Length: 227
Image 1: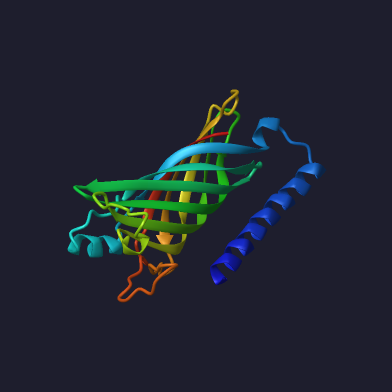
Image 2 (image 1 turned 90 degrees about the horizontal axis):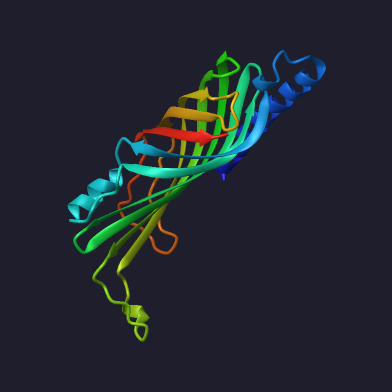
C-alpha cells in the first residue's frame, strides 16, 4: 500500500507540473508551435538486469536461470513543453528460457513516470535529461515440459511453481527526439534505474521458506518510441 501511495503521489506531482506549464502557455505567446505538444505514443525497448538473486536458487537446483535481458512493449502519454517534458508510461515485458525438459517464464508490468528538463529544444531535434520513477511487478513460472496433466487426477499435478514480487526503481535517464518536423517523430530513451525496495519473492498460494529479495539489483532500460 505504501508503494502504491508513493506512485500516486508522484503521478499527482507530475500532473501538477504539466498543469502549471499549460497555464503559463495560455498567458504567453509560443515562439514555435512545434516546441510544445501532447500526445499518446507506442514503443518497443528492453531492460537489462544486472543480476537476479533468484538465479542462484534456480542454478543450485539444476534449473534454467532467468534471462537478464527481456523485451518490453510500451505505450503512454507524453507532454513536451518549452523547458520541461514528461511521460506517463505503461510497459509490458517478458521472456522465457528452456533447458532440456525444464523451463521458466518471466512476465511483468512497469508503471513509469518520467520527468525531464529540455537541454536542447530545436525544431527538428531535442535532447532532454532527468529522472525515471518506476513501479514494477514480476511473475516467474518454473515448469517441467515433460509433465503430464491428468484431468481425472488434478490433485497430483504439481509441475508448475509460480512466484512474484514488486519493485520500486528511480534513476537518471536521457531522451533524444529526432524528425520532430516530420509526420512521424521518433524518440530514443536510455536510462539506469536503481532498485530501492527489497522485492522479496512470494507466492499467492503458498508460504515460502528461505525467501530472497532483489534489492540492489539495478537495470539499464532503453527504447524507441513513435510519437
